Length: 460
Ligand code: PFF
Image (tube, rainbow, N blue to C red; front, top):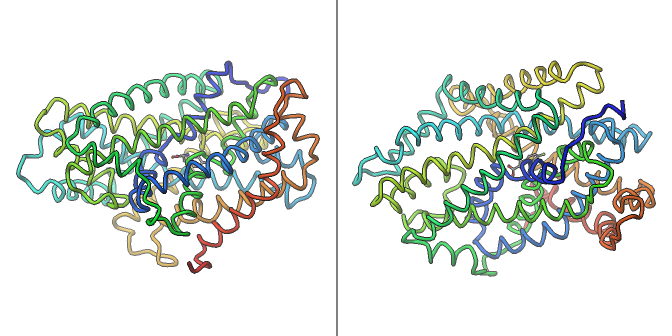
Protein backbone atom coordinates (compact mmCIF):
# COMPACT_ATOMS: atom_id res chain seq x y z
CA UNK A 1 0.00 0.00 0.00
CA UNK A 2 2.87 2.35 0.83
CA UNK A 3 4.26 2.10 -2.72
CA UNK A 4 0.96 2.83 -4.43
CA UNK A 5 0.03 5.78 -2.27
CA UNK A 6 -0.75 8.98 -4.18
CA UNK A 7 1.55 11.99 -3.94
CA UNK A 8 1.38 15.65 -4.69
CA UNK A 9 3.42 16.39 -7.80
CA UNK A 10 5.24 19.61 -6.91
CA UNK A 11 6.15 21.96 -4.08
CA UNK A 12 3.91 24.62 -5.62
CA UNK A 13 1.04 22.12 -5.66
CA UNK A 14 1.59 21.29 -1.98
CA UNK A 15 1.60 24.92 -0.92
CA UNK A 16 -1.47 25.75 -3.02
CA UNK A 17 -3.43 22.73 -1.71
CA UNK A 18 -2.55 23.30 1.95
CA UNK A 19 -2.99 27.08 1.70
CA UNK A 20 -6.27 26.34 -0.09
CA UNK A 21 -7.36 24.34 2.94
CA UNK A 22 -6.44 27.19 5.26
CA UNK A 23 -7.85 30.07 3.23
CA UNK A 24 -11.62 29.89 3.47
CA UNK A 25 -14.71 31.33 5.08
CA UNK A 26 -12.57 31.74 8.19
CA UNK A 27 -10.44 34.38 6.47
CA UNK A 28 -13.00 36.29 4.48
CA UNK A 29 -16.09 35.90 6.65
CA UNK A 30 -15.08 35.09 10.21
CA UNK A 31 -11.86 37.08 10.47
CA UNK A 32 -13.36 40.48 9.58
CA UNK A 33 -16.36 39.78 11.85
CA UNK A 34 -14.09 38.90 14.80
CA UNK A 35 -11.81 41.85 14.05
CA UNK A 36 -14.88 44.10 14.03
CA UNK A 37 -16.17 42.64 17.29
CA UNK A 38 -12.82 42.85 19.05
CA UNK A 39 -11.67 46.32 18.22
CA UNK A 40 -9.57 46.04 15.04
CA UNK A 41 -5.79 46.22 14.85
CA UNK A 42 -4.97 45.10 18.41
CA UNK A 43 -6.94 41.90 17.77
CA UNK A 44 -5.03 41.33 14.51
CA UNK A 45 -1.74 41.70 16.33
CA UNK A 46 -2.67 39.02 18.87
CA UNK A 47 -3.95 36.86 16.04
CA UNK A 48 -0.60 37.10 14.24
CA UNK A 49 1.34 36.33 17.42
CA UNK A 50 -0.84 33.27 17.92
CA UNK A 51 -0.20 32.14 14.32
CA UNK A 52 3.57 32.38 14.82
CA UNK A 53 3.85 30.96 18.34
CA UNK A 54 1.12 28.32 18.29
CA UNK A 55 -0.14 27.85 14.73
CA UNK A 56 3.11 27.11 12.90
CA UNK A 57 4.35 24.56 15.49
CA UNK A 58 1.01 22.75 15.48
CA UNK A 59 0.93 22.69 11.70
CA UNK A 60 4.43 21.22 11.62
CA UNK A 61 3.30 18.62 14.16
CA UNK A 62 0.38 17.58 11.98
CA UNK A 63 2.66 17.41 8.94
CA UNK A 64 4.98 15.17 10.94
CA UNK A 65 2.22 12.68 11.79
CA UNK A 66 0.87 12.56 8.23
CA UNK A 67 4.11 12.18 6.35
CA UNK A 68 5.64 9.82 8.87
CA UNK A 69 2.74 7.38 8.67
CA UNK A 70 1.83 8.01 5.02
CA UNK A 71 -1.76 7.07 5.68
CA UNK A 72 -5.13 8.62 6.49
CA UNK A 73 -5.26 10.51 9.76
CA UNK A 74 -6.99 7.76 11.80
CA UNK A 75 -4.44 5.12 10.80
CA UNK A 76 -1.59 7.62 11.16
CA UNK A 77 -2.10 8.10 14.91
CA UNK A 78 -2.57 4.35 15.36
CA UNK A 79 0.80 3.84 13.66
CA UNK A 80 2.43 6.15 16.19
CA UNK A 81 0.73 4.75 19.28
CA UNK A 82 -0.61 1.37 20.20
CA UNK A 83 -2.60 2.84 23.07
CA UNK A 84 -6.31 3.01 22.21
CA UNK A 85 -6.56 6.49 23.76
CA UNK A 86 -3.81 8.21 21.76
CA UNK A 87 -4.26 5.96 18.74
CA UNK A 88 -7.84 7.14 18.29
CA UNK A 89 -6.86 10.80 18.14
CA UNK A 90 -6.89 10.71 14.35
CA UNK A 91 -10.36 9.22 14.27
CA UNK A 92 -11.54 12.17 16.34
CA UNK A 93 -10.33 14.37 13.46
CA UNK A 94 -12.26 12.28 10.94
CA UNK A 95 -15.49 12.92 12.87
CA UNK A 96 -14.62 16.61 13.38
CA UNK A 97 -13.87 17.21 9.69
CA UNK A 98 -17.15 15.52 8.67
CA UNK A 99 -19.15 17.66 11.08
CA UNK A 100 -17.43 20.90 10.04
CA UNK A 101 -18.01 20.01 6.39
CA UNK A 102 -21.73 19.49 7.10
CA UNK A 103 -22.37 23.09 8.14
CA UNK A 104 -19.60 24.63 6.04
CA UNK A 105 -21.38 23.51 2.85
CA UNK A 106 -24.55 25.31 3.97
CA UNK A 107 -22.75 28.67 4.07
CA UNK A 108 -20.87 27.67 0.91
CA UNK A 109 -24.25 27.21 -0.77
CA UNK A 110 -25.26 30.76 0.25
CA UNK A 111 -22.00 32.07 -1.14
CA UNK A 112 -22.59 30.28 -4.43
CA UNK A 113 -26.11 31.72 -4.61
CA UNK A 114 -24.74 35.23 -3.94
CA UNK A 115 -22.21 34.83 -6.74
CA UNK A 116 -25.09 34.00 -9.08
CA UNK A 117 -27.21 36.83 -7.69
CA UNK A 118 -24.43 39.37 -8.17
CA UNK A 119 -23.82 38.15 -11.71
CA UNK A 120 -27.53 38.79 -12.28
CA UNK A 121 -27.05 42.34 -10.99
CA UNK A 122 -27.84 42.15 -7.27
CA UNK A 123 -25.84 45.30 -6.60
CA UNK A 124 -26.99 47.28 -9.58
CA UNK A 125 -30.73 46.63 -9.46
CA UNK A 126 -31.37 47.79 -5.90
CA UNK A 127 -32.39 51.39 -6.41
CA UNK A 128 -30.65 54.36 -4.86
CA UNK A 129 -32.51 56.00 -2.06
CA UNK A 130 -34.00 52.67 -1.00
CA UNK A 131 -33.19 51.58 2.52
CA UNK A 132 -30.57 49.22 1.10
CA UNK A 133 -29.73 47.34 4.29
CA UNK A 134 -33.40 46.48 4.76
CA UNK A 135 -33.63 45.31 1.13
CA UNK A 136 -30.57 43.09 1.46
CA UNK A 137 -31.77 41.82 4.80
CA UNK A 138 -35.03 40.78 3.14
CA UNK A 139 -33.21 39.02 0.29
CA UNK A 140 -30.93 37.14 2.67
CA UNK A 141 -33.63 36.14 5.14
CA UNK A 142 -35.99 34.95 2.41
CA UNK A 143 -33.26 32.86 0.81
CA UNK A 144 -31.60 31.38 3.90
CA UNK A 145 -34.89 30.39 5.53
CA UNK A 146 -36.32 28.82 2.38
CA UNK A 147 -36.67 25.02 2.78
CA UNK A 148 -35.52 24.13 -0.77
CA UNK A 149 -33.37 26.75 -2.49
CA UNK A 150 -30.35 26.80 -0.13
CA UNK A 151 -30.26 23.01 -0.21
CA UNK A 152 -30.05 23.01 -4.02
CA UNK A 153 -27.04 25.35 -3.89
CA UNK A 154 -25.47 23.34 -1.08
CA UNK A 155 -25.75 20.14 -3.14
CA UNK A 156 -24.35 21.88 -6.23
CA UNK A 157 -21.39 23.02 -4.16
CA UNK A 158 -20.61 19.61 -2.67
CA UNK A 159 -20.83 18.01 -6.11
CA UNK A 160 -17.93 20.21 -7.24
CA UNK A 161 -15.91 19.08 -4.19
CA UNK A 162 -16.91 15.49 -4.86
CA UNK A 163 -15.67 15.65 -8.46
CA UNK A 164 -12.29 17.03 -7.44
CA UNK A 165 -11.90 14.37 -4.74
CA UNK A 166 -12.84 11.52 -7.09
CA UNK A 167 -10.35 12.78 -9.69
CA UNK A 168 -7.59 11.99 -7.20
CA UNK A 169 -4.86 13.69 -5.22
CA UNK A 170 -2.74 14.95 -8.11
CA UNK A 171 -5.31 15.26 -10.88
CA UNK A 172 -8.07 16.53 -8.62
CA UNK A 173 -7.07 18.23 -5.37
CA UNK A 174 -3.69 19.51 -6.56
CA UNK A 175 -4.84 20.58 -10.03
CA UNK A 176 -7.93 22.37 -8.70
CA UNK A 177 -5.84 24.17 -6.05
CA UNK A 178 -3.19 25.19 -8.58
CA UNK A 179 -5.90 26.86 -10.66
CA UNK A 180 -8.22 28.21 -7.95
CA UNK A 181 -5.64 29.72 -5.61
CA UNK A 182 -3.81 31.96 -8.13
CA UNK A 183 -7.21 33.17 -9.42
CA UNK A 184 -8.18 33.88 -5.81
CA UNK A 185 -5.00 35.95 -5.26
CA UNK A 186 -5.63 37.90 -8.47
CA UNK A 187 -9.21 38.72 -7.41
CA UNK A 188 -7.98 39.69 -3.97
CA UNK A 189 -5.50 42.18 -5.41
CA UNK A 190 -8.06 43.72 -7.81
CA UNK A 191 -10.62 44.12 -5.00
CA UNK A 192 -8.06 45.62 -2.64
CA UNK A 193 -7.16 48.23 -5.24
CA UNK A 194 -10.85 49.10 -5.73
CA UNK A 195 -11.32 49.32 -1.99
CA UNK A 196 -8.46 51.75 -1.55
CA UNK A 197 -10.47 54.19 -3.67
CA UNK A 198 -13.64 53.83 -1.59
CA UNK A 199 -14.58 57.03 0.27
CA UNK A 200 -14.11 55.37 3.68
CA UNK A 201 -10.69 53.90 2.85
CA UNK A 202 -8.67 55.95 5.33
CA UNK A 203 -11.01 55.23 8.23
CA UNK A 204 -11.23 51.54 7.36
CA UNK A 205 -7.48 51.15 7.12
CA UNK A 206 -6.92 53.00 10.37
CA UNK A 207 -9.38 50.63 12.08
CA UNK A 208 -7.38 47.71 10.69
CA UNK A 209 -3.85 48.92 11.28
CA UNK A 210 -3.96 51.30 14.22
CA UNK A 211 -4.01 49.19 17.39
CA UNK A 212 -6.11 50.37 20.30
CA UNK A 213 -5.04 48.13 23.17
CA UNK A 214 -7.74 49.47 25.46
CA UNK A 215 -10.19 47.41 23.39
CA UNK A 216 -8.37 44.17 24.18
CA UNK A 217 -9.50 41.91 26.99
CA UNK A 218 -8.96 38.25 27.89
CA UNK A 219 -11.97 37.24 25.83
CA UNK A 220 -10.68 38.89 22.67
CA UNK A 221 -7.24 37.33 23.19
CA UNK A 222 -8.79 33.86 23.43
CA UNK A 223 -10.95 34.65 20.44
CA UNK A 224 -7.82 35.52 18.43
CA UNK A 225 -6.19 32.23 19.44
CA UNK A 226 -9.30 30.23 18.46
CA UNK A 227 -9.60 32.12 15.20
CA UNK A 228 -5.97 31.38 14.28
CA UNK A 229 -6.49 27.64 14.81
CA UNK A 230 -9.67 27.60 12.76
CA UNK A 231 -8.18 29.69 10.01
CA UNK A 232 -5.11 27.47 9.65
CA UNK A 233 -7.33 24.33 9.44
CA UNK A 234 -5.56 22.82 12.43
CA UNK A 235 -6.45 19.79 14.57
CA UNK A 236 -9.11 18.26 12.32
CA UNK A 237 -6.87 16.00 10.27
CA UNK A 238 -6.87 18.07 7.04
CA UNK A 239 -3.18 18.96 7.10
CA UNK A 240 -2.20 15.56 8.46
CA UNK A 241 -4.02 13.89 5.56
CA UNK A 242 -2.45 16.22 3.00
CA UNK A 243 1.01 15.64 4.49
CA UNK A 244 0.56 11.93 3.91
CA UNK A 245 0.80 12.82 0.20
CA UNK A 246 4.05 14.81 0.64
CA UNK A 247 7.31 13.53 -0.83
CA UNK A 248 10.21 12.69 1.48
CA UNK A 249 12.16 15.77 0.40
CA UNK A 250 9.54 18.37 1.34
CA UNK A 251 10.77 20.86 3.93
CA UNK A 252 7.75 20.74 6.23
CA UNK A 253 8.77 23.55 8.57
CA UNK A 254 9.33 25.91 5.67
CA UNK A 255 6.01 24.82 4.15
CA UNK A 256 4.17 25.47 7.42
CA UNK A 257 5.66 28.97 7.53
CA UNK A 258 4.73 29.73 3.91
CA UNK A 259 1.17 28.48 4.37
CA UNK A 260 0.69 30.52 7.54
CA UNK A 261 2.01 33.66 5.84
CA UNK A 262 -0.36 33.17 2.89
CA UNK A 263 -3.31 32.53 5.19
CA UNK A 264 -2.68 35.61 7.34
CA UNK A 265 -2.01 37.75 4.29
CA UNK A 266 -5.38 36.76 2.77
CA UNK A 267 -7.21 37.47 6.04
CA UNK A 268 -5.70 40.96 6.28
CA UNK A 269 -6.39 41.67 2.60
CA UNK A 270 -10.01 40.59 3.16
CA UNK A 271 -10.15 43.14 5.97
CA UNK A 272 -8.69 45.75 3.62
CA UNK A 273 -11.48 45.03 1.15
CA UNK A 274 -14.31 44.94 3.66
CA UNK A 275 -13.62 47.73 6.16
CA UNK A 276 -13.18 50.67 3.76
CA UNK A 277 -16.59 49.85 2.24
CA UNK A 278 -18.13 49.31 5.67
CA UNK A 279 -16.85 52.65 6.93
CA UNK A 280 -17.86 54.59 3.83
CA UNK A 281 -21.40 53.26 4.30
CA UNK A 282 -21.38 54.12 8.00
CA UNK A 283 -22.13 50.55 8.91
CA UNK A 284 -21.23 49.20 12.32
CA UNK A 285 -18.15 46.99 11.84
CA UNK A 286 -19.61 44.73 14.53
CA UNK A 287 -22.42 43.67 12.18
CA UNK A 288 -21.80 40.00 13.04
CA UNK A 289 -22.22 36.97 10.79
CA UNK A 290 -24.68 38.75 8.53
CA UNK A 291 -21.86 41.13 7.54
CA UNK A 292 -21.03 39.32 4.32
CA UNK A 293 -24.60 38.86 3.11
CA UNK A 294 -26.41 41.95 4.38
CA UNK A 295 -24.10 44.75 5.48
CA UNK A 296 -21.51 44.18 2.79
CA UNK A 297 -23.67 44.33 -0.35
CA UNK A 298 -25.16 47.46 1.12
CA UNK A 299 -21.70 48.85 1.87
CA UNK A 300 -20.41 48.05 -1.63
CA UNK A 301 -23.45 49.74 -3.12
CA UNK A 302 -22.92 52.88 -1.11
CA UNK A 303 -19.16 52.95 -1.67
CA UNK A 304 -19.23 52.27 -5.42
CA UNK A 305 -22.82 53.12 -6.37
CA UNK A 306 -21.65 56.13 -8.43
CA UNK A 307 -19.86 53.78 -10.82
CA UNK A 308 -22.31 50.98 -11.68
CA UNK A 309 -19.79 48.91 -13.64
CA UNK A 310 -17.26 48.92 -10.82
CA UNK A 311 -20.03 48.17 -8.35
CA UNK A 312 -21.16 45.21 -10.46
CA UNK A 313 -17.58 43.91 -10.77
CA UNK A 314 -16.89 44.29 -7.06
CA UNK A 315 -20.00 42.24 -6.23
CA UNK A 316 -19.28 39.43 -8.67
CA UNK A 317 -15.57 39.28 -7.86
CA UNK A 318 -16.11 39.33 -4.11
CA UNK A 319 -18.52 36.40 -4.09
CA UNK A 320 -16.39 34.53 -6.65
CA UNK A 321 -13.48 35.01 -4.24
CA UNK A 322 -15.56 33.51 -1.44
CA UNK A 323 -16.65 30.57 -3.60
CA UNK A 324 -13.04 29.71 -4.52
CA UNK A 325 -11.82 30.06 -0.94
CA UNK A 326 -14.67 27.92 0.35
CA UNK A 327 -14.18 25.24 -2.29
CA UNK A 328 -10.52 24.58 -1.56
CA UNK A 329 -11.21 24.36 2.20
CA UNK A 330 -14.20 22.08 1.73
CA UNK A 331 -12.15 19.80 -0.53
CA UNK A 332 -9.59 19.36 2.26
CA UNK A 333 -12.34 18.61 4.79
CA UNK A 334 -13.92 16.05 2.43
CA UNK A 335 -10.56 14.34 1.87
CA UNK A 336 -10.15 13.50 5.59
CA UNK A 337 -13.09 11.05 5.88
CA UNK A 338 -12.75 9.95 2.24
CA UNK A 339 -9.13 8.83 2.70
CA UNK A 340 -10.07 7.16 5.99
CA UNK A 341 -13.03 5.20 4.59
CA UNK A 342 -11.30 4.22 1.38
CA UNK A 343 -8.14 2.97 3.14
CA UNK A 344 -9.68 1.42 6.25
CA UNK A 345 -12.61 -0.26 4.57
CA UNK A 346 -10.53 -1.13 1.49
CA UNK A 347 -13.01 0.33 -0.95
CA UNK A 348 -12.55 2.45 -4.06
CA UNK A 349 -11.93 6.15 -3.51
CA UNK A 350 -15.04 7.06 -5.52
CA UNK A 351 -17.27 4.87 -3.30
CA UNK A 352 -15.75 6.35 -0.16
CA UNK A 353 -16.26 9.87 -1.50
CA UNK A 354 -19.89 9.06 -2.30
CA UNK A 355 -20.51 7.90 1.28
CA UNK A 356 -18.98 11.12 2.64
CA UNK A 357 -20.93 13.31 0.22
CA UNK A 358 -24.24 11.63 1.11
CA UNK A 359 -23.61 11.83 4.87
CA UNK A 360 -22.64 15.52 4.64
CA UNK A 361 -25.70 16.30 2.52
CA UNK A 362 -27.99 14.64 5.09
CA UNK A 363 -26.42 16.57 8.01
CA UNK A 364 -26.27 19.69 5.84
CA UNK A 365 -30.01 19.50 5.11
CA UNK A 366 -30.74 19.61 8.85
CA UNK A 367 -28.32 22.51 9.33
CA UNK A 368 -29.91 24.40 6.46
CA UNK A 369 -33.48 23.75 7.62
CA UNK A 370 -32.56 24.97 11.08
CA UNK A 371 -32.31 28.46 9.54
CA UNK A 372 -36.01 28.30 8.75
CA UNK A 373 -38.66 25.67 9.37
CA UNK A 374 -36.60 23.74 11.93
CA UNK A 375 -35.44 26.89 13.69
CA UNK A 376 -37.52 26.09 16.76
CA UNK A 377 -35.66 22.84 17.42
CA UNK A 378 -32.98 23.75 19.90
CA UNK A 379 -30.53 21.92 22.11
CA UNK A 380 -28.71 23.87 24.83
CA UNK A 381 -30.44 26.91 23.35
CA UNK A 382 -28.71 26.41 20.00
CA UNK A 383 -30.18 25.64 16.58
CA UNK A 384 -28.84 22.59 14.73
CA UNK A 385 -26.57 24.81 12.61
CA UNK A 386 -25.19 26.61 15.67
CA UNK A 387 -24.73 23.30 17.46
CA UNK A 388 -22.57 21.91 14.63
CA UNK A 389 -20.52 25.11 14.55
CA UNK A 390 -20.14 25.36 18.33
CA UNK A 391 -19.36 21.67 18.92
CA UNK A 392 -16.67 21.53 16.26
CA UNK A 393 -15.06 24.96 16.39
CA UNK A 394 -15.34 25.80 20.05
CA UNK A 395 -15.11 22.36 21.64
CA UNK A 396 -13.67 19.65 19.38
CA UNK A 397 -10.98 21.79 17.79
CA UNK A 398 -9.25 22.94 20.99
CA UNK A 399 -9.80 19.55 22.65
CA UNK A 400 -8.17 17.80 19.74
CA UNK A 401 -5.38 20.41 19.85
CA UNK A 402 -4.73 19.74 23.55
CA UNK A 403 -4.45 16.01 22.92
CA UNK A 404 -2.30 16.37 19.79
CA UNK A 405 0.19 18.68 21.50
CA UNK A 406 0.47 16.45 24.58
CA UNK A 407 0.79 13.36 22.42
CA UNK A 408 3.50 14.72 20.15
CA UNK A 409 5.25 16.80 22.79
CA UNK A 410 5.37 14.13 25.49
CA UNK A 411 4.51 10.70 24.12
CA UNK A 412 6.21 10.48 20.74
CA UNK A 413 9.95 9.83 20.70
CA UNK A 414 11.77 13.12 20.29
CA UNK A 415 14.26 11.64 17.83
CA UNK A 416 11.45 10.44 15.56
CA UNK A 417 9.95 13.92 15.45
CA UNK A 418 13.25 15.71 14.90
CA UNK A 419 14.32 13.17 12.28
CA UNK A 420 11.14 13.60 10.25
CA UNK A 421 11.06 17.38 10.40
CA UNK A 422 14.74 17.68 9.43
CA UNK A 423 14.36 15.10 6.65
CA UNK A 424 16.71 12.73 8.49
CA UNK A 425 19.19 15.43 9.33
CA UNK A 426 19.59 16.65 5.74
CA UNK A 427 18.13 20.08 6.47
CA UNK A 428 19.30 22.19 9.31
CA UNK A 429 16.34 23.30 11.27
CA UNK A 430 17.08 24.86 14.62
CA UNK A 431 13.44 25.88 14.73
CA UNK A 432 12.47 22.27 15.51
CA UNK A 433 13.68 22.70 19.10
CA UNK A 434 11.44 25.76 19.42
CA UNK A 435 8.52 23.80 17.94
CA UNK A 436 8.96 21.02 20.48
CA UNK A 437 9.18 23.52 23.31
CA UNK A 438 5.88 25.09 22.20
CA UNK A 439 4.20 21.70 21.84
CA UNK A 440 5.28 20.68 25.32
CA UNK A 441 4.89 23.78 27.42
CA UNK A 442 2.94 26.55 25.70
CA UNK A 443 0.33 25.16 23.32
CA UNK A 444 -1.42 22.73 25.73
CA UNK A 445 -1.80 25.50 28.28
CA UNK A 446 -3.16 28.02 25.72
CA UNK A 447 -5.53 25.41 24.32
CA UNK A 448 -6.85 24.34 27.73
CA UNK A 449 -7.75 27.95 28.50
CA UNK A 450 -9.39 28.36 25.06
CA UNK A 451 -11.35 25.15 25.62
CA UNK A 452 -12.53 26.09 29.12
CA UNK A 453 -13.53 29.50 27.83
CA UNK A 454 -15.51 27.82 25.03
CA UNK A 455 -17.32 25.75 27.65
CA UNK A 456 -18.17 28.97 29.46
CA UNK A 457 -16.27 27.87 32.57
CA UNK A 458 -14.00 30.89 32.75
CA UNK A 459 -15.42 34.08 34.05
CA UNK A 460 -13.34 37.04 32.93
N1 PFF B 1 -9.53 27.02 7.57
C1 PFF B 1 -10.86 27.06 7.02
C2 PFF B 1 -11.30 28.50 6.89
O1 PFF B 1 -10.56 29.40 7.28
O2 PFF B 1 -12.41 28.71 6.42
C3 PFF B 1 -11.87 26.29 7.82
C4 PFF B 1 -11.43 24.95 8.28
C5 PFF B 1 -11.05 23.99 7.33
C6 PFF B 1 -11.33 24.68 9.63
C7 PFF B 1 -10.58 22.78 7.78
C8 PFF B 1 -10.88 23.47 10.08
C9 PFF B 1 -10.50 22.54 9.15
F1 PFF B 1 -10.04 21.39 9.56
